[in-house]
Image (cartoon, rainbow, N blue to C red):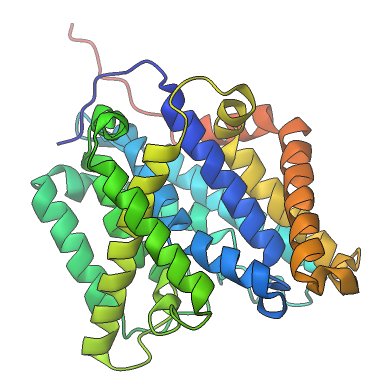
Length: 340
């Protein structure tokens, strides 16, 4: 069962989250044109093999307090839902959508993560009552069985919440110190080597991932039958595990100031960068620049733009409002009555 003992802040985790949130920004910057730029398409496919599964795992790793002493953190769940809805409406507004009310519960883009966090937090009382092997195994079976269901419109983020639940459960159960031990394990280099081979295969053949890659998004239903879909998902999961272990092994363990600070600002960066990207698409015409289709220059511009967006998001003073929202006691906890 997950430990409830408070631990000092571990710089490795901030660094991992810093790497992941930058990959989220980079991936979103590339999305509008990655199909038309072969270099971006390659990098995009490699990022999407693992960055969201590992991000969800890290969320589970720090969700030990979601259910503690028989009490579920309802207030945090409410905060996630409200933040997800506000985030959703903000993106639709920037997009210039005329269907803001119609799409308010269709979380097909970035706000899905806020709603999924609410679902995962709500699942912690059940996860806490079963053995970790049972909890992770059952979560994975549910994700496999859910595969044929088509809720790719993002309704209440149900599909992605179920699809990524095993990763949240794995993080929820795991002692954080077990993650730090990967840095010292020689066998983790095997994951780095295998990840390099898989990456090389994608570089050599742009179609090599096509047969299973839809499983990486978490919201696409099985397209080639139930059995084939389960095989596709199992392969995608295994590859995500390999890349996640490799990423942990390669991430610096000590203090790397810019990376560590970025890892401490993931929520703010996650929200703000997606609004900026929406403005780049619908307001600024950034993606109409022909040079973005050039494999070399387009990639360099995407990298520079991602770094600039990340730094801008870190500089915007949104920390206190977000902290106020996420810690707000929407439903005050009842204090036990004193005995007379």
